[in-house]
Length: 111
Ligand SMILES: [Zn+2]
Ligand SMILES: [Zn+2]
Image (cartoon, rainbow, N blue to C red; front, side, top):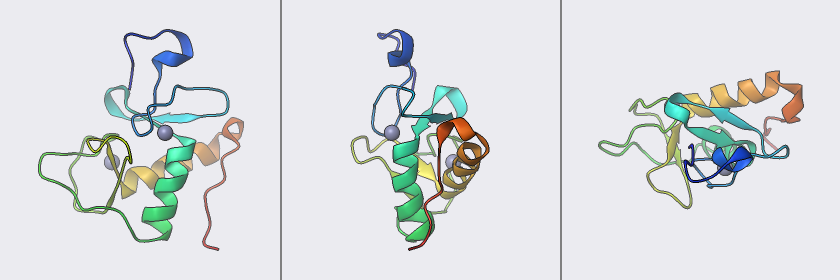
């Protein structure tokens, strides 16, 4: 999200943990300025893609990143139940991080 009351890095906040952007906290941007940080994506990927967990879609609540409603499982923010991310956005965001060496992102693997 874009926090219009803040400046600089603080302007960019993860929609899922509300932490501001920083060097250590890379983010992927979705539609309408939505953002997910690497830490949240790691949890989402582990729970939904590796663990087969997550929550089903709710009426009227689309994926925060792609704004679509689809019937895949979603990861829901622990602090903001209006922020959900669909499985396909979790996977495509992980690919975006993978392609950018600056993020030092490693896609979680089945252990
Ligand atoms: Zn986050
Ligand atoms: Zn999505």
